[in-house]
Amino acid sequence: MAASVNEKTGLDPAGLGPRLAALLIDWVLCLLIASLYASPFEVAWPAVVVLILANTFFLGLFGQTPGMRLLRIRCASYPDGGVLGLGRGLVRAALLGLFLPAMIMDSNGRGLHDRAIGSMVVTIPRD
Image (cartoon, rainbow, N blue to C red; front, side, top):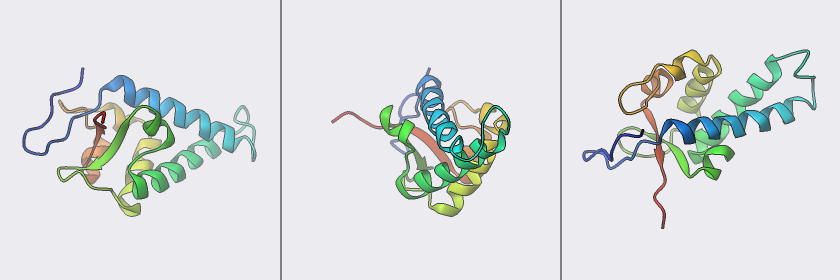
């Protein structure tokens, strides 16, 4: 269950379900792209590299991966809500590629990868 909107920042943390679903969508897309270069059944690392590159690009410049866009969530700078930039996006993506930091969360659902760079996955309000 997602925490309520933070009164100080105005950010509404995204729930675990939408975040995992977005990651699954992104992972499938990365597997498809990586399969153009190597079979994921034989070599696993190309898909992880594609995931890191895609997350760096999309989160760093736009604040959303394709999966996040579909599920109406975004990764925002904490606490101001801005876009991360490519440097912070790369660090977050590399930590996400390790998987374990993403599983160690605080009460706002921020994993170690989010706390390390000062970000938070939040919901996008409906218009």
